[in-house]
Image 1 (tube, rainbow, N blue to C red):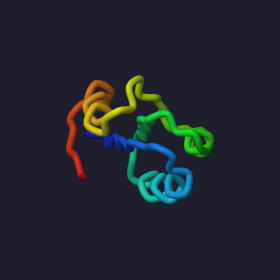
Image 2 (image 1 turned 180 degrees about the vertical axis):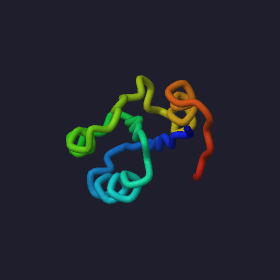
Image 3 (image 1 turned 60 degrees about the vertical axis):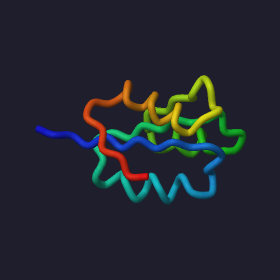
Length: 80
């Protein structure tokens, strides 16, 4: 059986993350958030949803964050 993992890259997204999670939760088997050291409530909001939350060690590049997600999931299809 196929599963759908949704990966979301964040940085200080407390204003948007709830809406994003609400939109993917009905179809995702797994939600992974890769955060770039947010200083707002992004992580706390994600915790309420029970997502897998990782903090990127080097938050200096969106592309570095994106590449790190490849290690956390299998087949990758992206929507930029």
